[in-house]
Image (cartoon, rainbow, N blue to C red; front, side, top):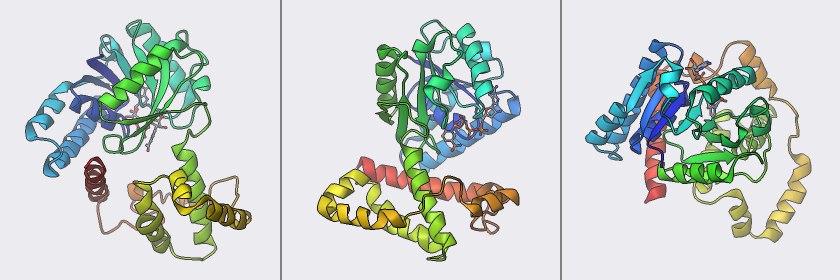
Length: 310
Ligand SMILES: NC(=O)c1ccc[n+]([C@@H]2O[C@H](COP(=O)([O-])OP(=O)(O)OC[C@H]3O[C@@H](n4cnc5c(N)ncnc54)[C@H](O)[C@@H]3O)[C@@H](O)[C@H]2O)c1
C-alpha cells in the first residue's frame, strides 16, 4: 500500500486531507502556489492536531510525528514525483483542474492514482482531456476534512477496478468512511441531500414560520440528533412505511421546489455578508473571532466522532 502521497492545494480542504494522511503514517508532500499559503496551512494542521491532543484523541507524539511527515513544497514536480496517490484540492474551476491533470500525468509515476476533491464536477467532465483516465477518480472529502468521516468516491467506467479497490481500501485505512456511488450524478449524494434540506429551511425562514435560530434548533435537537446515528432511509423504516407514505403524500405538494438559491442568500452575497468569514451572514459573528467559532465547531465534531466510534 502507498506510503507517500501528495496533496495539491493547501486551502480549506487540502490541509485537512493532508492531516488525515499524515496521521495515518503517510509522508505527505503538500503543494501550493506560494510558500505563505503552505505555512498557514501547516499552522492550521498544527492547531487541529493540538485540539485532538487536548481532546485525548491522539497522543502528543502522534501530533509531532504527523507534523514531521508533512513536507511543504512550491515545486509540483517534487511534490508528485514519488507519490502513489495524488489528491487535488485546488479551486473549483474546470480549466484549472484540466491544466493540473495534464501536468500530473506528465510528472507523476505511471501507476500513481490521481484523486480529485471536486464538489460539483462529474468524473466524466474531469477526465475529458485526460490521457490516462483509468487512474483518475473522485474522493470527495467533507469540511472539515480531518474530522468528518465521510468520503464520497465517484468513478467513471474508464476508471480501473483496481484503482477503485485501492482507493476504497486506502480511505478505510486512514480512518474514513468511504461510500462508492453507482452513478456519476451532480452533487453526488451528500450535497444533494443537504441542498434539498437547505432549500426548505430558507423557505421556512422566508415565510416567517420561525427565526433562523429556531429552525437550526429543530435540526440540531431533532432531526440532526437522530441523523448522526440513523439515516433518512432507516428513519422511514423505524417510523413505519405506512406512516411515511401518508406524511410524504400530504407534505410533498407543500414543499418548496425552487430551482435556484434562496433570495436571502443572493441578497447577503450581494452585500458581501458571507457568514463566518466576513463576520456576518444570516447570523452575526461580531462577538467571536472566526477562529474561535471554528474551534468550537471542531471540538463538538471531535466529541461526536468519539461517541460514534465508542
Ligand atoms: N470548502 C469546502 O467546504 C469544500 C468541501 C468539499 C470539497 N471542496 C472542493 O475542494 C476543492 C478545494 O476547495 P477549498 O475550499 O479547499 O479551496 P481553497 O480556495 O480554500 O484552496 C485552494 C488552494 O489551492 C491553491 N491553488 C490555486 N490554484 C492552484 C493550482 N493551479 N495548483 C495548485 N494549487 C492551487 C490555492 O492557492 C489555495 O490554497 C474544490 O474543488 C472544492 O469544490 C470544498
